[in-house]
Length: 248
Ligand SMILES: NC(=O)c1ccc[n+]([C@@H]2O[C@H](COP(=O)([O-])OP(=O)(O)OC[C@H]3O[C@@H](n4cnc5c(N)ncnc54)[C@H](O)[C@@H]3O)[C@@H](O)[C@H]2O)c1
Image (cartoon, helix red, strand yellow):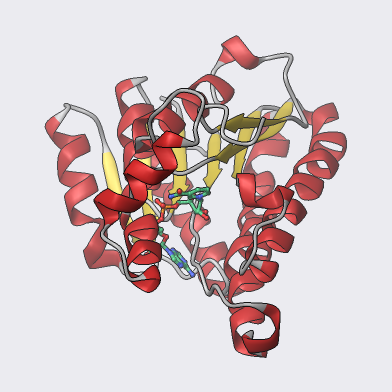
């Protein structure tokens, strides 16, 4: 059975991705910083008749990541798909951005994707197959108030291209999705910080999006599913923008 390790899978895009990959037939390691928070996703997957385990793991912690990936492979039988999805925001204009804001965002997105990918390839290289899907963002193109996040999400694209070069000879595809505005707790928190309701921010964003709506977590999960499938067997090193045309 195909086994997928999805980080930040307790909620939002990660949870939708875990469910979608389970529907595709994979057993899922539902990884998040708080193991208890993974219960809802695990229950939903088990409800689909698929297999899932909750794994508490802070993706910035080398020992926790190595142990979590090894545990997933041991309990579920292999490691075939890694989805680096865990993320946080610490938005601030440059003059107000603290070193902690910078380090936290770099740590979760970039160090996290590096540590999880390094741990996963230890399983994928010997079996000569694997799929890694990273999570960039339209913010990689630049976004006011997100110097840390934009730099991390652009970094994810460089990491993706480089890992594709290094791991391709071992049958491992490495790609990224770059979501636009997706309705999750992350964007609801952004709305709260701006002093507007989540619905108002979604409506305003939909107006300036060619497809005239914001994204749903399933919109991203569908593209991750494609990149993790054999339909994308000859696709590697790519970043696919999934943003309703927002940044055209
Ligand atoms: N929502 C959007 O509009 C949007 C747009 C572009 C990119 N993204 C990216 O998509 C990914 C998922 O975003 P979301 O909107 O579902 O966010 P979310 O805040 O709803 O979920 C993020 C998850 O990551 C987990 N997480 C945070 N730090 C962690 C750590 N150190 N270790 C393990 N898990 C950790 C959280 O506990 C949470 O469950 C993120 O990488 C985000 O940057 C989101």
